[in-house]
Image 1: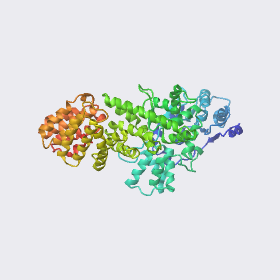
Image 2 (image 1 turned 180 degrees about the vertical axis):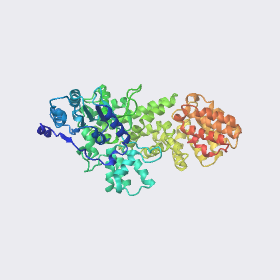
Image 3 (image 1 turned 120 degrees about the horizontal axis):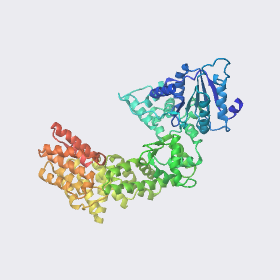
Image 4 (image 1 turned 135 degrees about the vertical axis):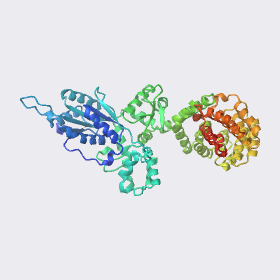
Amino acid sequence: MRKQAGEVGTLLRLVADSRTETDEALIGREEQLTQLRSLLACHRLVTVTGPVGVGKSVLCDAAVRGARPSRRQVVRVSWPEATGRPGAFRDAVRQALLGTALGQPGPRGPRRTPPRVLLFLDDVDPVHDECVGVVQRHLLHHPTLQVLATARSPLGLGDEKVLHLGPLGTDPDEDGGPSPAERLFLATAGGALRRRDPDTLERVQALCRTLEGLPLAVELAAEQLSSYSLHDLAELVEHGQAWLRTPHQRLRRHRSMEEAVGAVHALCSPWMRMVWSRASILAGSFGEAAAVLLCSGGEVAPHQVPGLLTQLAALGLLQYENDPHGPVEPRYRMPAAVREFGARRLTEAGELAIAVERRAGHCRRIVHLAEHLWDHGHQTQAVRLVTDEQHNVAAMLRHALTSPDPTETVAALETATRLWFWWVTGHNATGLRFLLQLLARCPEDHPAAVSAAWLAAWLAARTDPDTSLSLIDRIWPLAVLDGDDTLLARIAHVHGLVALTLGDHAQAAELFEQACVLAPDHATGGPGRAVYLAALAVARRASAPHTAHRAALAALAQPGLRDDVWSRMRARYALTLVDHDNGRTARAWTRAHRAVSDTDSATCAPQAHAALRSLLTVLRTGQPTGDHVIPGLTG
């Protein structure tokens, strides 16, 4: 029987003294180790689950060492390879137990207390289904037997207690000390990381976040410091993790991230592998609808995709971003190492081009829907929708920057322009960077380039006036020739913001007045008259306070403002600021307090919300207002 077990690649041994693990391997797992020992003290069947490389075996080794003094023997059976004949695992467990007191015939005479044995079944994923039956039978036949198992999913037996391990935390602790992932990295690096200054620790923190706190990846990365500097290592990890490897790991599949993820790939069905590779094109989190669009086709029917996603999540290849049993559609996220492995398989299968095209179509649909929600009074839902899909949209825009197809560049530029409301709600720098890069690849007279140039000029008005003015000068003649009053109004608004930035309030006020005159009653795709009036009130508040007050009131009286939280918050800010300047402190306090109490304002208008909170602080302390709060309105 031993020969048969060896032929199928079974690692079988009777453990007298477990291998001594270094203390570094358990860094960040102290709480889980205590929980596991507590479960072993009270329950007969305990399963430790978690994704690849999370440290299940290391934790169980430490727990078994601590539990041994209370037991006669500990038996360990490992099954790391997805090979073997049917029944080989059953025979291996039976052979292991023959070497214990449970496998020996009891003495004749008075009945004695049965021996206590802990059966440690490590890495049973390749024989998961067979393991369930084996464990159930042995627990029934041996009342004193206890079983500890490691697998990527629970065994599913009724009396089973499950301890799920996730990646190590990457956020600093409450005292501002290093996170568990950082402590593991520093301990593994040892003398290879000579300096521990704040800049070094900051780079280590960023590196651990890139590695998503996965213990195996953190350890493998720390061992590379003998060949790379910390700066170079961080840059290399940003572009991929499959290359991380070491010859020092006990298990072969843990000697590189490629082999570790590949071991799970061998456990998947062909349909799971197809969904895995196709879903790897999605960055960040994604929902079932996006997965069905991207992953169906060929042998995978659309109705099969949700079930296959659940199976991938059970193996730790996908992580849930929300409660999968909640009222909303479950959302998934694929870890970076898993996505990188799937992306290579996608390229090898020749499906990369179609996957990129499908992702672009999905992103355009999301942006169109979000823009429609924003324009029709559902701004909070629009922001949340783009927030959920922002990584996929960014990936689509980055791909367009490298595509030789000019139509893809134009489509990406149009998509980026439709996202104007997203860029101006806290993502100015990102939006400006994408727009400028895409504009450099698009003809200047293209209609998409004209709208995008105005948006880029608006985003740059407060931080880079020279770039803003150069973009406006490029598109102003085209707007005049086309007689596009809406675009001319927006150009005047941007000119006014630049003047305000440079301190010329009089010139800014004149330009804002022009924008108010040119603006149509109902504008989409950008700011409207309410925003121009609010800016006019801010520009006039020192030189003509009564005119500024009328402009602020007019901004709040604009039609449709009730459903436009973003514009309304700017109008409220302008009126509050003017009231305070005119000595109406109590009224200003009331207005500001009511404005920040709006539950949607922090989501839809974060800059104006923050500026109003700053203004509340000014009102509370009695300090004079200054231009430090103006960016909340115009930024």
